[in-house]
Image (cartoon, rainbow, N blue to C red; front, side, top):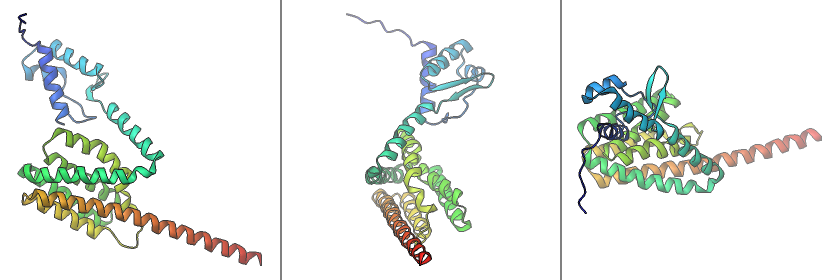
Length: 258
């Protein structure tokens, strides 16, 4: 049976373009997209055609319409997804090893691809956040250290030039970072981790700069393994301190009872 080929509706074409832009991060999560009039002028179509496409995205919860303020890319589906993972990790602390294993292999893969595919613009972004992390370490600004560290790894994911990696890093991996990796910066350890973190970031950056995929992957894995081991060692250190404090308090109480 012969099928008739019909031209795609204008609203469907607009919908496809908007979806691609949202997926590629051109319209960022939580960010405002251009108004109907601007989109209509850009595409050379009527505003009602644009409105049909926007309403479809609203129905899918991809966009939010704010009265008198325009359209925003929704973050709710992502938040719901991450919240469910946070709750699971909170209930199952024994999953932490799996988290580190997953992060190590994924970030190794992203670093390898970044070394193969990065552009000069990608390289500038990676180096920018690497330097910001070092500056924050020197000034002792913990909040900036954490933010620069997250951004450094995100720019590497972006440099892999794969939409799925960019979204994975910006969502799930970022959440896992907040749950685990960031604690290495905030913890009081016997050894300051910052010099090693700085050196490891430099090693990853230089491998990407010199287009050495295997070395970039290995440097990323070394970095993640160091972070995982440091967190576990620090936890043991805190546990020993808490145990010693408890014994000291018991001794003091016994002495007071004499």
